[in-house]
Image (cartoon, rainbow, N blue to C red):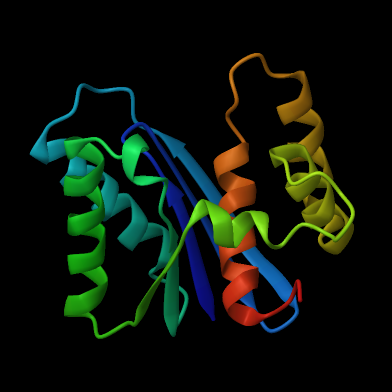
Length: 157
């Protein structure tokens, strides 16, 4: 099983993919101000949400360097430490890697990626429809987590 993670300091999205199936998804909003305690709360939430799965590798979506605050880097270090201690390999995926998943001939956009994933996993259609209605983007991180997990499982090639 592969765990895909897409996170910032407020929103954490996880996707568990096994072979051809999307096993589970999880999104959680953390509104508190940034602190080391918040990082530990996020890491604990990740640990609790995957405790019933035997994860063999983790793929983390990493934003462009200019989008990474010191708080985000601290959070990613804590998340990586969590998996390193458990001997679970970590792979990172850049925005360029994620954009490469979009079909040839289509504009490489967030919407195109979401549509590609909805075709592959119809159970994501509800989240896609909600995301299109939302003023503030909430579910895109979920789609990003699914995309990086699928990328590692080579499901979208």
